[in-house]
Image (tube, rainbow, N blue to C red; front, side):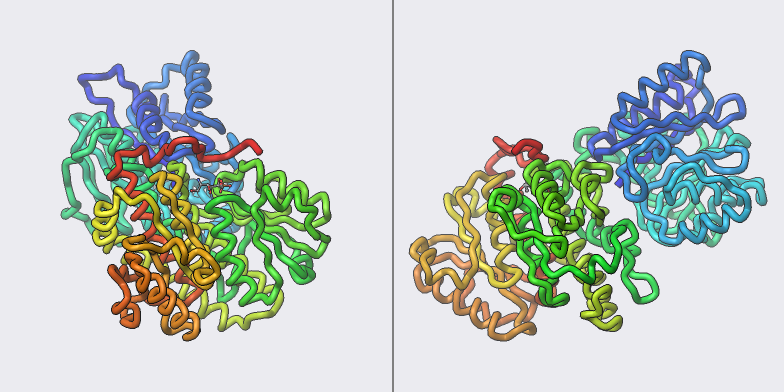
Amino acid sequence: MCGIVGYAGPKASAPSSRPVDVALQGLARLEYRGYDSAGVAVIDDDAVRVTKRAGKLANLREALAKSSGSTETTGRVAIAHTRWATHGGPTDTNAHPHLGGHDHELAVVHNGIIENFATLRADLEADGFRFASETDSEAAAHLVAREMTQTGDLTEAMRRAAASLEGAFTLLAVHRDAPDTVVAARRNSPLVVGLGDGENFLGSDVAAFVDSTKEALEIGQDQVVTVTADDVRIIGFDGAEVTDAARYTIEWDAAAAQKGGYPSFMAKEIHEQAGAVADTLLGRLENGSLKLDEMDIDPSVLRSVDKIVVVACGTAANAGAVAKYAIEHWCRIPTEVELAHEFRYRDPVVTEKTLVVAISQSGETMDTLMAVRHAREQGAKVIALCNTRGSTIPRESDAALYLHVGPEIAVASTKAYLGQIAACYLLGLFLAQVRGNLYPDEIAALMSDLEQIPDQIQQVLDSSSQVERLAQDMKDATSVLFLGRHVGYPTAMEGALKLKEIAYIHAEGFAAGELKHGPIALVEEGQPVFVIVPSPNGRHSLHSKVVSNIQEVRARGARTLVIAEEGDDAVVPYADEVIRVPATRTLFAALLTVIPLQIFSCELATAKGLDVDQPRNLAKSVTVE
Ligand code: AGP
C-alpha cells in the first residue's frame, strides 16, 4: 500500500509553490501509510529529474536540499511516491520514481502488483531496455516509454501500456516531451484527482492534497486520466471518453483523511481486510500450481521436513495456531505452535529436519528473532511470514513469504492477522504441493474457495451494525469469555486478546471442550460469553459439541453471543445474539469469524473513549526481550 502524489501547476497566484514542494507536502500527508523509501520526479529544462532515497522522508528532503542548491528545480509538474516494498528490498535503487526509456526520458510511480512483469521485462530487455532495479514498476516505466516513442502522445502511450498489464496497479507518469502533463492509469488500486484553481492533483487517497483542495474526482476501474494545471480528461482503457466521473467535496480534514474518514487507524484497517487478504493471495496460483516466488527454499529441503514448529508472539501466535490445523490436515506433518519467548528457553528438540515458521508482522519482535536465531543454531531451516520487507526476522531466515496487507499502524493487529492466516494457508498448500500430499485439482479447489474469502470478508464488514450496537450496549462489561473449538479456539484467543489490549477488560479465550474441566465455574448470571460455532456442514460432531457448550453456559445464566454460519438454525434456541458469517470450509472460517470480535473490541474501546490506536503500556513492535 504505497503512497502516490501527482501535481500539475503551479497556479499563477502562487508561483513560489514549486511542484517539488507540493509533492513533498503530499508525501508528508501520506506518511501515516508507513514506508521504507520515498522519491520525487520533476520535469526541468526538458529533462526528467528523479531524486529518491531509502528510509524516511527526511532522507529525501536532505537529498533534495543538496540537489536543488545547484539547480532551481521548478518545472510545472511532479510525481512522488512513498514505497511499502513488495517486490525487491527497500533500497535507493528500488525506490520510486522509476525512469523509463533508452534515454530515461520518462518517470513512473506505481502502487500495486503487476503480475505479468516477468514476461514484460524479458520482452523489454529483448528490445534493449536496461533495468536498474528488481521491481515490477520499472517494467511499467519502460513499457510506457516504448509506447510513447511509437505514439508521441503520453495519454495514448499510458492507455496502451496499462491495457497490457495484469494485476493491480495505479501508475503515474511524466515525460520530458510533455512538461505540463501528468498521466495516470488505475486497475484494482486507488486513485483520486484533486481539482484546484489553476492547479490539479492526483493521489492514492485524498490525504495527499486535502490541504490544497476539497474538490475531488473518483477515477474508475480501467481508466486513464490526463492532468494539466487547467484541465482533467478521463478515458477508458478502450479509448472511449469518460464524462460521468463522480465529483465530490471532501468532508474530512487532513488528519481524518489519513484514517480514510474512520475514527481510528484500527477501524480503518479492520475495513481494509477484504483487500488485504485479496492482495496476499494475488498472483500466487499460476497454471494450476502455487508459486511462492519470494520463498526461495530448495523443495528437497521441504520434502525432508519431519516436524514444523511455528514461533511467534501475541496475535501472530494465534495465527500460527490456526495454521497448525491446516498444515497438519493437508500435509500430515506434526506441527507445534510455540510462544517464541518460551521456545527459546525450553531446550526444544530441533534438528536439521525441523522447519521453523516465524510469523511476525513487524519482522522486529525480539522474542521471535531470538527464537529464530536459536532454531538456526540447532540446524533448523527457518521461513519467515512477514509484512515488512527488509526487516530483521526475514533477513535472518532462510526464506520469507511476505504478506501484502500494507502498513499496519494501529498497535492492535487486525488485517495483518488475517494476512498471516492467509499466508499460512498458502504455505500449507505449497508444502502439500511439493510433498505430493494433495493432488493439483484438490489444491485448485481449495484455492478457489480461498479466493472467495475476500468477498465474504466484505459481507461481514458490511453487516457490522449489529456488533457495533452490541459493543455500545456492553461498554461497561468487566469480564467477557470467548469459546471455540478447532480453528475457533485460536479465534477465541484472538478475540480475548483484542478486548484485553484495547478496552482493558479482563477477557479469556479457551477451548470450548475445556469448560467442564474448570472454566465453567466462572459462568454466573449475565456473564457475556462469545461462542464461535464451526460450520454445520463440516464435521458434524464438532458442530453439535459446540452447540452443547452453548447450552451448558446458557443453563448457568450466561449471555450467549454466538457467531455462526448463515442458515445454522441449531444455535438459535440458545443464543441471546446470533452474529452471522457466510458459509465456508471449516478451516477457512478463521478468516471470517474473528472479524465481529475485532469490530466488537474496537467499537467498545471507542465507546469507552480510549485511545484505540495507541493503547496504554503497548508498542506496535516489541523490540526488547
Ligand atoms: C497484537 O494485537 C499485538 N499488537 C501483539 O500481540 C503483536 O501481535 C505481537 O507483539 C507480535 O508482533 P509481530 O507480529 O510484529 O511480531
